[in-house]
Image (cartoon, one colour):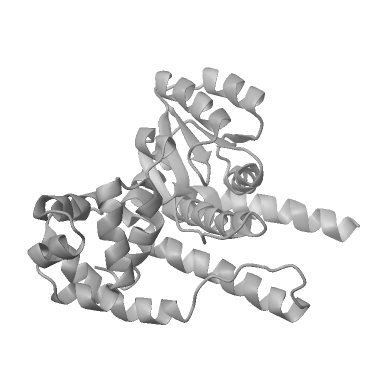
Length: 288
């Protein structure tokens, strides 16, 4: 397990999409973190009023072959979670003083990036970079704040001469999806993974055979289940007032990783484009 992989963050983020029985196991683990490494599978089953088979199923849902691997991961995460208990996300309250707002926003954004590093699958990033290097065209789909992340992505990939475009409303997304084929890559950006416009577009893209990359929260969702490659983000469970902030910053960071991965792998070919685009922007500024 890498120093950045924290199974406790994965359990927290996945909780809402678990079965009722799996939730019993998850809640007990999150409430009794320090005790878990010392428990046998039989003890954990008794304490959660489930069965050995249910606990094993839970471990497999979390991506582990068996209970022993799961417990090793829990032990490794306990120390960092102790820090996390003192280091929770803080919601923005009406009437907060500006210094508190400043501190909380910086803290929450940093934590969202850190937690995303815990849940994102590095091998999925490698697969995503590979398909982005080989494709004819990249199409980004996102609604609302997620659409703004797509616009940022288009700006970056355009600089290295990748054919790409972002679509941020339902109608244009359906039209773009209809024109995609198996040599294209569709990147769906959606925190929930269940936005209706996104799922309608996804169905068309899948029918046309394009590769689907999802940037979405670490959870079971229709988008995550149907995507070829899933890049998970972790976001705070806060109110509507500040929820979109953490997800946006995590998504932008994932886009930066994909861009840097592609640009670095193809640096010999793309450095001329990066230089040209930098020079033209610089010369325009000087004229002003």
